[in-house]
Amino acid sequence: MIVRKFGGSSIGTPERMKNVLSLIQASQEQQLLVLSAVGGVTDRLIEIYHSKSKQALESLKEFYHDYILDLLILPENRELASKYVQESILHIENEIENLNLILSQGELVSTYFFSLLALESQINIQLLYSPDVLKLDEEENISLQKLSMNLSTVLNENVDLYIAQ
Image (cartoon, rainbow, N blue to C red; front, side, top):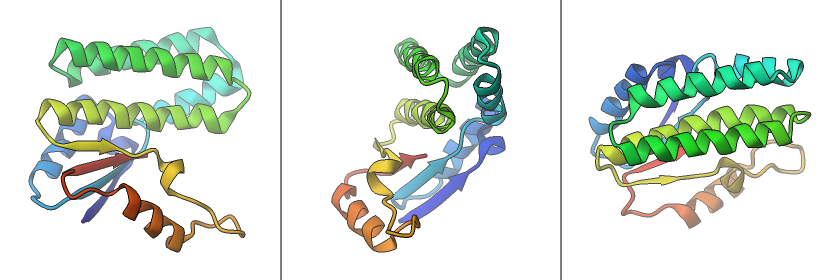
């Protein structure tokens, strides 16, 4: 299995996200893709946390709307992505005092967008929710033993690409 990690600037535009997809498609091996939030989104989320601004939230929603239109082809996938953004915005509004939850929304949205893009390209994918797989040991470090054990329970030879945050 190949593990690939892409930061925000690597997926900062729909075109860059499509380039990441091309890299994924170039390999015949099973892959695990780990994505950060789309470039610039983490800064926006930090601003939302500090300002509690509805205008900043609306600006983020508009940014995602334009991103979706340039990224996805199928109308049903655009609708799914838009609904996911709406749910993410609601989570942010409901947990406006929780910076970690707010920041996690950026990564969750980017992984969801990429999953829809991969599905449009007929790639057999599975989304992984990182907290379900990454477990900390007693000293708050990632336990490689637990990670290996957890991954072995979710990995499936019929899946071409796992996508996580």
